[in-house]
Image 1 (tube, rainbow, N blue to C red):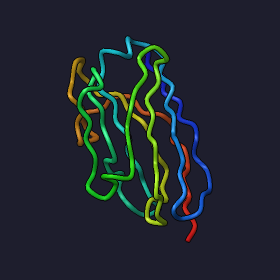
Image 2 (cartoon, helix red, strand yellow):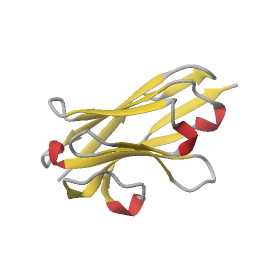
Image 3 (cartoon, rainbow, N blue to C red):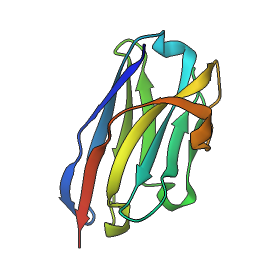
Length: 126
């Protein structure tokens, strides 16, 4: 069984920064690509970023490119999302997820992920 626990969310002013963490327990973390998604009130869950199982490839939604950075530490079984230059439109619940198959590159489709964390709230005030 896989468990994912996010932390690091909070309230920040526009232009500020937050770093989200996702602690992973269960099957070998280093074999799986990981992703971050977010869901704002009344909106569908959307892809934010993904990182391959090696950490060598990363992907971002256009709206966060240049501001967010996804990374992973396989010694700590943790994936991170560094968020800089935050905007009010970044306000959402952010969730991390494990990609379904091993040795993946990281998918932008939520249907390719099989385990999810409970989410952490990020609120950006203007």
